[in-house]
Amino acid sequence: MPDPTVTASTIDQAMTFIAARRFGTLVTSNAAGRPSAVPCVYAVVDAGDGPAVVIALDDKPKGVPVPELARVRNVQTNPTATVLVRDDTEDWDRLAWATIRGTATLVEAGKAGHGDAVAALRARYPQYATHGLERASQIWLHPTGASVWSAGGDIAAARPTDLTGITRGRRSVRSFRPGPVPREAVVRAVAAAGWAPSPHGTQPWRFVVLESRERRAELADALSATWRSQLSLDSQDPAEIERRVRNSRDRLVTPPLLVLLCRYLPDTHVYPDPERRAAEQTMATQSLGAAAQNFLLSLYADGLDAGWMCAPLFAPDVIVATLGLDPALEPHAFFPVGYAARDPSRRPRRPTEDLIARWE
Ligand SMILES: Cc1cc2nc3c(=O)[nH]c(=O)nc-3n(C[C@H](O)[C@H](O)[C@H](O)COP(=O)(O)O)c2cc1C
Image (tube, rainbow, N blue to C red; front, top):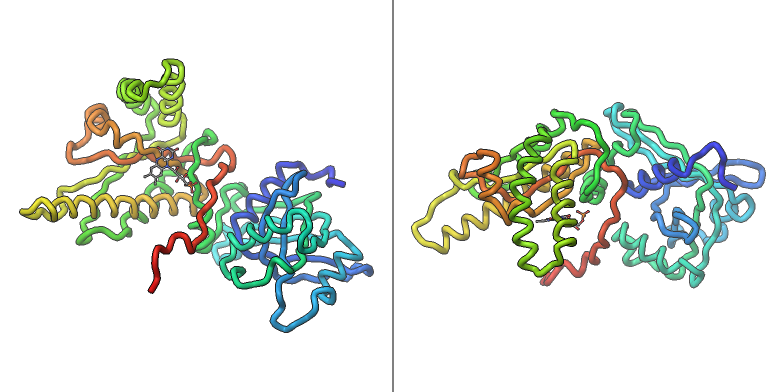
């Protein structure tokens, strides 16, 4: 039975927190109530009636047969269990943890959900590629309660502190809570971008920060004409065109902050031949992507989120003219920035081996 003092939103918050992290502790207890705590890795999966935390009983190097594991015996006699996941850091302002309490069940190979859970675990932990997870039983923890705590007070803004957690946790967010974005976080993100690789170290990109909603509304109005004429080229019906224009306008105006990233070529090398000139410009664009990623990761590590909009590529002159920018600034991307209104659904990632075209 769900714990009446725990709201569904606490369980959701705890699930979001643990899904963005990679290591936890599973606590079970035997019939006499003696607790056993073991480190675990896990995946959050859809159990049909809500999310569940799955832990595989993988091959143990020391060869302990699975039924003799204390956690297996415990779960069989006392299904109440807890998973604890913590952000441990010397910076106590960033400490955070979540516990999920629930009913644990053993799911054997071949049972419903087992295969999907194997896939979810392998997607999270490449180390599992060579483990015989298909044959291994799993512990599924079905949540009945949860607790969350963060030194910063907002568990949604507590972020993993390790590189893997940060690179995997960053996500494109398209809808934000109201509330200001701390200026220091934006400055830190631009500073992080400054450490991106760039051709000859020229740093061929600049950021334009737009806090003013009036300024953004002006920009959206100026862009609307271009959006309309481009969408009508796709023979879209007028109502759909208006819906999309409204949507793009909202994405510029409603977020707490909008950042425009521009390519900036004046300091790049100029070659006499068109091939090298073109290559230099491509390098600047490649470097802009690296700067953008550093910027986004820094925001994410600071508890913020951002989206990426390619709209500036299709109307750079309108943006430069409306904002009165230096004409050497070439608008490439908008980043709406703020605190996510909700967790966005993520596109699944290809298996890593698909991304390696050749290795010889
Ligand atoms: C160059 C570039 C342009 C993008 N343009 C848009 C865009 O115009 N609108 C949008 O909603 N997302 C845009 N995105 C975000 C992608 O859709 C998103 O990164 C992708 O779906 C993966 O999701 P994730 O960022 O949450 O991992 C863009 C991303 C990149 C790198």
